[in-house]
Image (tube, rainbow, N blue to C red):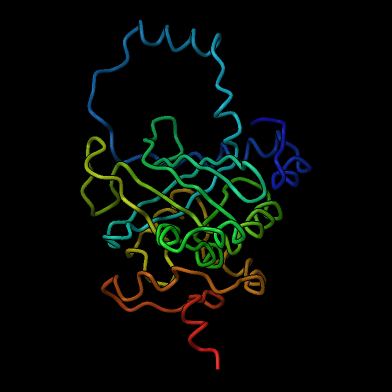
Length: 266
């Protein structure tokens, strides 16, 4: 792990980079379900990779040192859902950019990208652009979005900075989940992803399987973050997929759609 720290990794550095690194390594348990076709790497390819590692710079990706794991339903097909391992770079206080994988092991497949912006930047977007950005409060308050392997106080501080933020996520490869067919290679058009904004929107077992294999506890995390509800503001897009999951769902306290909040005002 890099020893330099961005603004919301300061608490992690205080905890000591060596200890944090060992915690993250302990969480490397989410293996991808899809193995793409193709011949194994030749000796020549491996030699070229080794040389490139020594001689070439990887400066653009050095800052992707924040690891998050959560879930995305596809906006046009909400029952198609993905576990997404985010490796993010905090560009500044209001913008982060993330590369998404279907696991956190060496063989993980890159299956998407996400840009995360603050409420301040979201409000500057044109109205027709806002339809592409999903809200994050439910992901945080439900406990589903996590930063595995770091101290609890640091993770909660990180989640606090992301309250009321928005994400624009494109998945390019359906690498599959349990009970869903996967594509062996990236196929078709990019898929705009959304967020879960009510309990029971996630397919049965999706969150539980993630928690079991990574030794996480979504229910406990939700309790630990209950005080963050006081920071939650009504967000755009909360009701975008309401009623589209084919099963009964329940509101999450503190998660409110901006249009519904405005309509409820006297």
